Length: 95
Image (cartoon, rainbow, N blue to C red):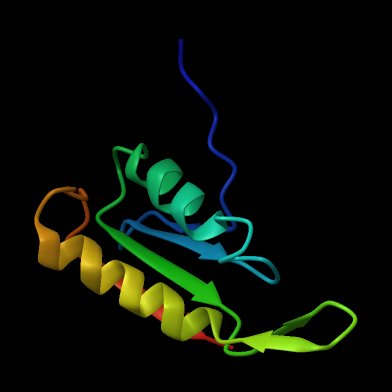
């Protein structure tokens, strides 16, 4: 059985998967879901992952920096060496 991946963008010549998270990238664990799903795309060599630089939520307007969290999480994944990702490179950008 083959699972159809729903991704935000694909560049076949450069073999780049694009994922954009507009909200709850960290709180909803969307960055981890995107990493796993994009890893299953066998034609992908690169992942471009966009997250918000500032995300506000709640009645107290709590703010968090999803970009910084995502960058630090990926640094930890690569530094630990315990989880191998199939990409030649990952670009994380904040918007």
